[in-house]
Image (cartoon, rainbow, N blue to C red; front, top):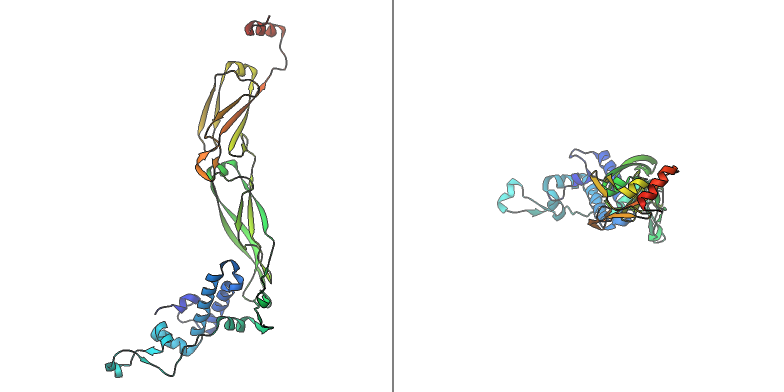
Length: 320
């Protein structure tokens, strides 16, 4: 059979004239090259296939020949012989039939009211859905940006988010209707605040205007324990003066759920910082590497001391 025209139009083999018209309108609107500027080659090929399929199936003679002899017989005009002249062998031409496919744009204009004027074709989708005079480029609507709130855990481990959007698009007649769509966003480990994820032309569709790109901008939610500094993770840890002088064991839960035990054996002085290599945020361009975990200490001094406590401290610390 070669090309399956029924499958191209998404109709059954018993499809009537109305079925074919509805299928053609829906698919031609979707795949017209003017409506797919970012994917024009594929759109042109599909648009021509759709037009050819409708041209064949909507013509009773072409459809009968196609159903009996397939695409090869239709286009070559070579039909298998009848049982009465089978002895002659092979196919024979039918001089009364010639397959001349209609121009895809001419067929489209018949459906949607396009006209030739001033040497440039104006193509109208619905009443005035998409107009392109003299091959001038369409104006594109400004991009629409939305925040994408992400936890620090999302950005550490990576995650998948689904965003439900509503937008206005024209139906087959050009009348606006609201449709809902779920967009899947694959957040990569190490992405930073401000990272942009673009969905081309997912904004509202208006006559004569290419739909806006929809952009999601990563926004980092505050975390109770960790603060991000580029690829590093920073923890501000407050400890008592006693712990600063005598030592302490800290316990931290990492962003991927592991437990870190951190023994403090040195005297912690103001400005003291402990650094753990490769325990920070993943580096998005180098997935096997991570930044540092930095623990900064804030020493909590007592608000007052008794005379006895002061005396004891002088004795212990060697004061006179």
